[in-house]
Length: 308
Image (cartoon, rainbow, N blue to C red; front, side, top):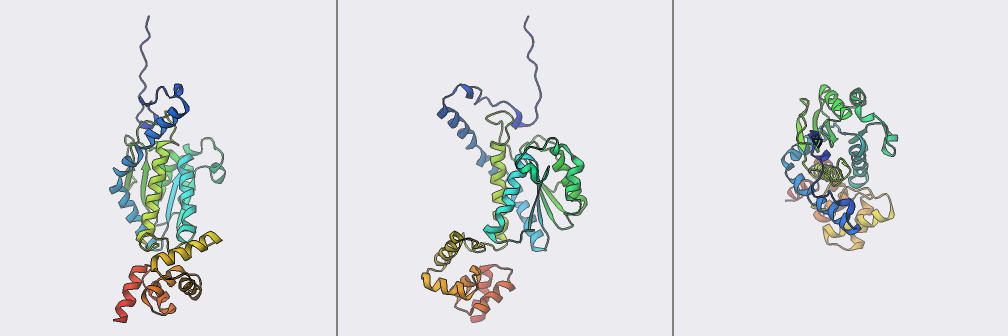
């Protein structure tokens, strides 16, 4: 007698079996890698489909930071680790204050290196994590592959109660939208190469979303000039060399002129840049940047208008 096949309803695409990789365990090493790579190539298009929602999140984050508030990331497992990494890298890359972007990870710091059982299933812990750190005017971005991680949803609910705007990056377009959300960014990357292994395509999508989100926010806040990192903090020899190269690239001037300008500006790349491009005194360049929120182009326009 044939036993009928049991059909299990799984509403998250990431948990479903991928028909393109059912024979992956029988492939050669190159075949395995090719199959994974073919799946990975689907991710950018999935992210492209949610760019309008991501743009709204960027605008909310920019508004929060301009108003003296903060951006918070909330995640668990892979999502939380990726968020923590993104927040950490913004400080040296764009020289932002360390409290501009705050990462909250289920299970705390220990969970960054080791799995902490049941940490992501604790709704109350998520709420407690942000209850005193998220304030009115902040922006909170949650990340969860399933779209329903209790720790993350609990944190978003509490953040909304505190007056923050909220958004969720989800890998499950079928999940019920939490009522406390201002923005839902549901990236449909489909079934993973290995069913349920959301460190793969879902994780890659979250990394792309996070990098685009934070970089776009930094650009809108004037932390770049053109496509150059003019707000970076030169904390080692490599970065000090990069600072000089960026100044030369932006101005077309000699290494000596750029080095002299940096020295005069106390190592502040933006001040040296405005001074070299406009010809004004270093003090005037620094004042113009202060008056225009650190935006190089706005500062240049201002000093040029004053110069007639």
